[in-house]
Amino acid sequence: MKNLLNIATAEIGVKEIPGKKSNPKILQYAKDCGFSNYTNDDAAWCSLFMNWVAYKAGLERTNKLSARSWLNVGIPVENPEPGDVVIFWRESRDSWKGHVGIFTGISQNSSRIYCLGGNQGNQVSITAKSTDRILGYRRLRPVGRLNFTTKILKKGDTGIEVVQLQDALKQLGFNCGTSDGIFGPKTEQALKDFQATDRSLTISGVLDQPTREFLVEILKSK
Image (cartoon, rainbow, N blue to C red; front, side, top):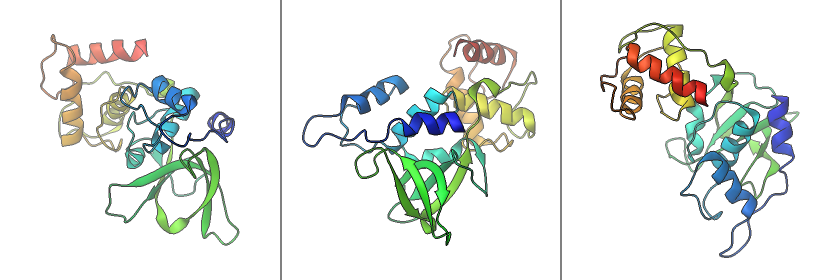
């Protein structure tokens, strides 16, 4: 995770511009990640920054501006290391609101963690945050290591092959939830959404041979 930390650390000090103008650097984060509708840095940008850092580091990302979307990527970890992603709740645990950043360390009394992220005090910075607000930690995997199965898969299947499919779908921006190895409704819908991008594919929610071949082709082009 050293490369991810280095990339993020180099951006410390990038901040919003007060008023109607926006910092071109923050808008460039959005452009690099394909967020064409992000045009004003008054909008929350912690997940935008996290997506940009992951993109530059060659790691999996959510392709979403929601902080809590980071709960659906990576490997859940209980004992974080510097460079792992940390997700917080805002207002309440049941709210849709949150914050995301990069874990850099923990205080001596373990009551706070130090988080490197965007939109912290309207800038990229390292701040201390209460451990009471943590929803989870995630360890991101290199995109190039998202292997892909040769099996035909459908709803109800389980196992490492399903994890590979879920990773591949998320790499392409189709949200199937956590890569838990269970081919459930979310994975089925994400696969249907992917199939709908090519007219030659049957929108079945089943990973058949034509769908697999097209998926592999798209993955190779990334």
